[in-house]
Image (cartoon, rainbow, N blue to C red; front, side, top):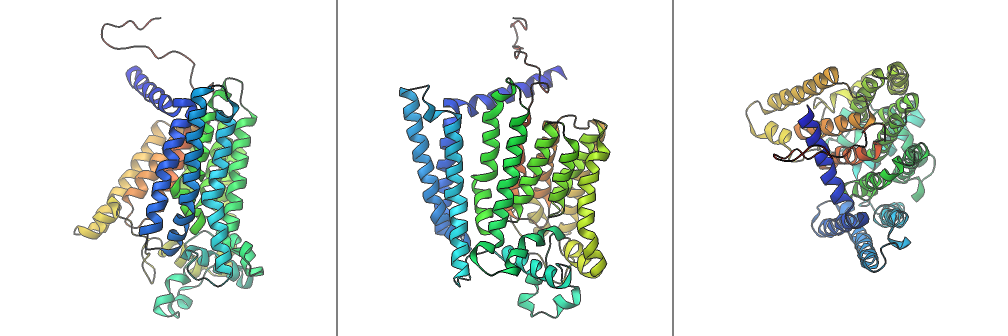
Length: 442
């Protein structure tokens, strides 16, 4: 156990060394440069027109951020203590990069779409807005199986709303007024920005002087949820996953600051939007049990999704079941087009009885995580976040039907974990040298 702990601490130390190189600017430069390349390639090669439009704008934004960080590095060599190269300046560049690579292309595509362009939004934008319109008119965001079957074969897929009922709230503005700023992506972005702002405020507001040294990790976590291309592209062209992710990050921030009730409410709001938040809610409930606060976490984490489901259940139970259960499990009238070449999809599509094998592997991964939670429940927000990140990564890799964009969940969660460390979580002791022939004492 001692050797494992030392190994883990050494890995964290090596990562921090890389992350802090040149005051964090070296990794900033790599992030923006690689992102600029990704956006440029997307603009040229993507088969999805909204993605191409995003790439054309975002590539310029990432390039400007790359040039800015390059100038910061050069300035730092001549003036190491310059305020233009410190942490506040890095936060400013991150904010401007998010505006240029996410908010600008989002607004551009929303305005073009309002002007009549039909190639400026992914299908989930239309689905959420239709769900909002149905919620306003019929009291449920879902079409029943008979209504979906009555649609023309090419339109049946668009009749499904494979989200939790709360997601329809983002479609209500469009149901009330048809203009560019009622595009559901605008409200996805607003919800994402609000949740991330609250998360940063929660973590900063309770930090001691020693904990403030971890603020660079908080910036890195925010970058992963905003300017990382998989997040920026998703929010600008589709967007429904980003408020879910941001609320999960907010819940984990509340957990790190010993506010279990608020953590339950935040992850409950996320769970009322999409199923992806439910595993995070489960882990947070287990975390709460280690602090005798499981009931407070569960009240929001379970209560809010149930409250969101209840009206739809009372209005049309068959419609709810068809959209929320049968379709995601592959038993709907049509098959989900989410097919990225991850191991689960490849196994399901190429091997005899492949879907059963992939499902068995997915269940095995779930059982392994359950055993981990039972035997070693997470006692810190960091441990809970790592379990969520690696667990979702395994699930996405093994699901027979999945999307490349879903990787934004584990990537952002794993990047968020270092920002949740507190001085009381890890004692500030030097890493002993355990190499042969070396003393472990100072």
